[in-house]
Image (cartoon, rainbow, N blue to C red; front, top):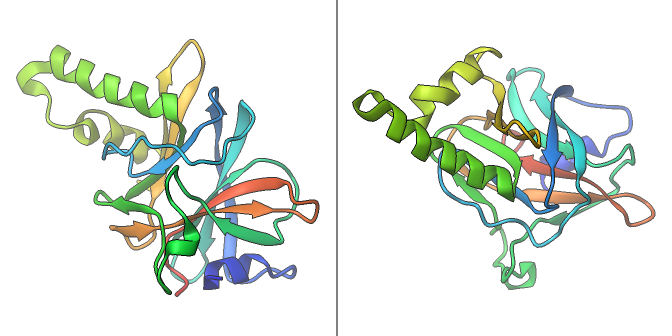
Length: 202
């Protein structure tokens, strides 16, 4: 178990401070965690019920950076963790110290419904068509303004007004890297959260 997961297991609290960021709308039940500016739309094998869920940032008090991001599925307390995998991945085949996760090249991670990621890709293509030579990148033409509303720490992009589908993104610890996500289970073996560890607590 990573140091971060051990820290979250402390009932008396520790060096991490939670902050509720935004509600995430899920319509398909298929969850993606990725760098939102890189096309990695393969969802996790585990699915959840459609609905609206809170995204929480866990801040390292001393470092003042996001050490982890959590998608809260219920009020239950996780007592054990399983690495989140995509179809075809098997944690029993991992070498010691290896993880399944996602690469970050832009200093951002996110949670989203798989359909929201597809919509984000469509939004980028539409901006390219509409702006022509004035289009620089999805970050420069859209994401930067969204993040600036929250001191570049996080932001939520609505990708479908009709359904409320959105992508909630957040700064990824120290920045670029390769990060694993974990499903949290309560005492009754129910999935209560999905958490991405940004390796701030090593």
